[in-house]
Image 1 (tube, rainbow, N blue to C red):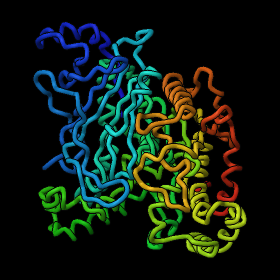
Image 2: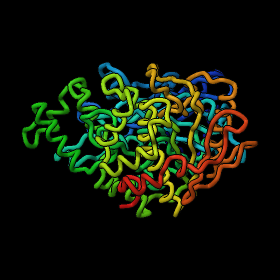
Image 3: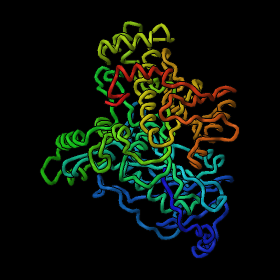
Image 4: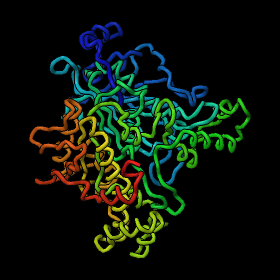
Length: 537
């Protein structure tokens, strides 16, 4: 999603005159808004309006491949904004399949309460959503935010950004790894600054939020000097600055997963990739690469190799987790949290080829991923006998080590300077909207991404789940409005920071409650036994 701009609130009053100049006044179900690049005609849905497929930057095609985003060209007449624009070139998030999408993909979508005016005349809060998908899949239009807009009274913007080798490529002839994916997101935030008021939003009241790779993006913007002033609050869902995964935890050949890597690594990988593609003539590498068909570049190997965000440059001078520890981040309130069973979704994709049939296999996993003393300590804290299956035991270990405790660690670093509110999504009956069947020995529970249907229209919910969704919508939009995640009639959310308290979110009369998350996820063990991941080195 993107940020908006406060100026020219009078456009809301001038729109009827503008529409007369352009032709007949638009029908009530086809509202027209004049953006800074030209007018767009959206769709009315009663309580809310949508404007989809709005270009926020020029198509990064041909000579603009691997260049920072340039302004979208102006258009004449009224542009139809009744359908999403093309998704960026990508691979399936799970399962097999070839590349889909287009390089001409820098589009965003706006969902706003019907009627441009907001109470008090300042404009509504704006929430800008960055989608997940590992930086190699996903799109903004996959998330339908009408609940946030209608119940929460906010303007929501969902954003496409370049993915994989198109978004995170580096090479010496580029001068490094410029981070085109993050630059696209910044361009969308600048679009929001310039256009929010025209959709009834307040460009001085922008919240960035995202899940998984989108959450890592929010982390990057929190620590990027280039993003200063573009947002005022941040929500980080299942992807903190310290997210990582132990080596060989999912497959024997996989090393440690770290989403942020030194720029030199990305540049070296880019030089090797260019040579393998036959583009290694000094001074002409980029011209050669830009002449290649997108399908030649959108291979699983290249899309996933270049799905890591480079630091050590002007965009991210420091590794983000180090920047948090040093206090080098933008001073905005933060909500952040994880799902109770994050790693079950990832582990499920590998169990068929790398099963965990018994306690011996579980113990072998521990010894492959950790040194012997740490493996013994982890087995004592997570005995296989305490879990339904060895696979559930291993997924719990990985969830705590990779997501829960690193997120709480980041919360402590943030909390020394800004208000921080921690949550844990705990509905183990959440709908499985992935299309992937659960392995018999590993039910998904509250797996990675399973909180999303409670904020966006993605999958059907039961009655109790709908009530939880209403509460979560109230918390999220209340935070966007005031910087405090408070909702009428909902339990109070404790302010975290240096404390261990988190708000557990589940259906039922007592489903929303405060928990000692550090104790429940054995974070003292991870702080002591896996330093450098969950504590300052």
